[in-house]
Image (cartoon, rainbow, N blue to C red; front, top):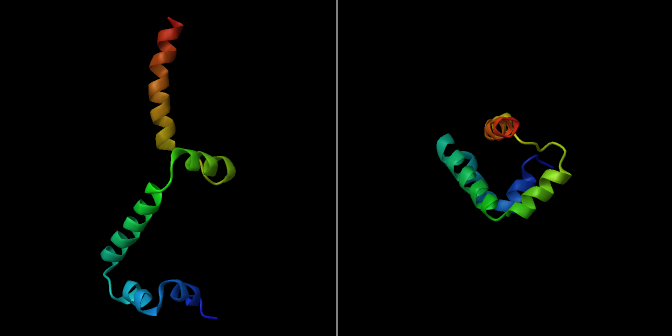
Amino acid sequence: MNRRDWVQGLLGAPVFEQLATGLAGSELQSVLLQVMHSRAGQRGPKDLLAQYQRARYIATGAGAQLIALRFQAPRAEAGAG
């Protein structure tokens, strides 16, 4: 079995070939980003929290942690005074 047989089975050979050879790299990236945007829009906060709780490889990024610390620090200083 070819590595991409399952993909062609899902999309059909013409669609696969269009994606694989008929688009410039930037066009393909735009298509994939739009697909991911659409999928993300179908998920609610409850779904994201459930995924976060069950998937051990999902965590907040360092940027999110820094933002949280930036907002918590002034409150902690105000409470200490």
